[in-house]
Image (cartoon, rainbow, N blue to C red):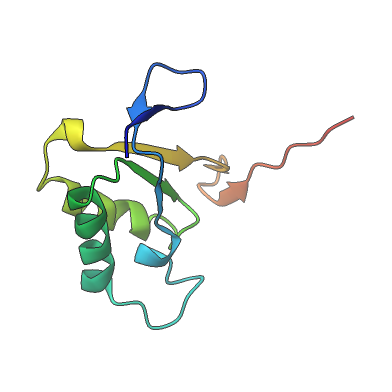
Length: 103
């Protein structure tokens, strides 16, 4: 398959992305094997997948940590990372979820 433009950007990616919720999402899935998750990321990149989708909520940052450990094995040109941010820490350093309210 040929790479495609990501949305209206100038970023070229493989047309299939890897969602990494199950890579480190211990808070969402039971009995995850972190080494197996890292191997999934390796296999995807070696197979041409160039867009990795992650979010802090996937294991409260653990998915992002495991991806970070794994992608060091590859050229920076081999992948792009999409992440989502919806949390912040308040003045007491307590985690809060950012909720959008439409009027």
